[in-house]
Length: 138
Image (cartoon, rainbow, N blue to C red; front, top):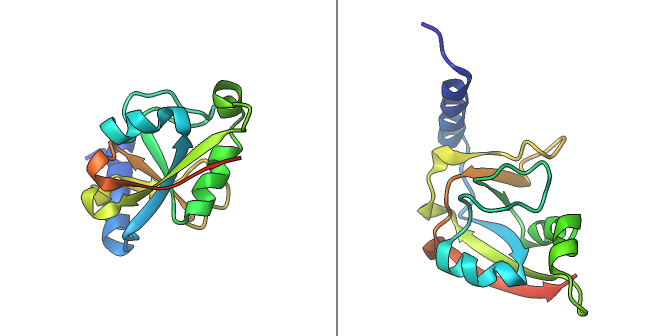
């Protein structure tokens, strides 16, 4: 029996989900002009990304709100698209991971040497799992 790469990845994610306890909350930071859409539709799906190496349909999450904010403030694309006279408005969301499928998580593969501070979620984070916890300018 030959196993495909996608099946192997799915199996690894399922095993990791069983072995590692997922934090009760994770964080995602986005931009002020996108906040209303996020409140209505959630995160993920077929939306534009603010990073060249981000994958459409993948939601990037952090274990700490400051880490999430720091990633949002360093996106050149976001500054180009959303900067105002006040700076770049960043909105931080807290995510209730109990409402998400644990088998759809993986360590963030874009971060070299990632020790688990940032994760990828392969799915939609529904509005019911989101709580806005901060707004500020970079």
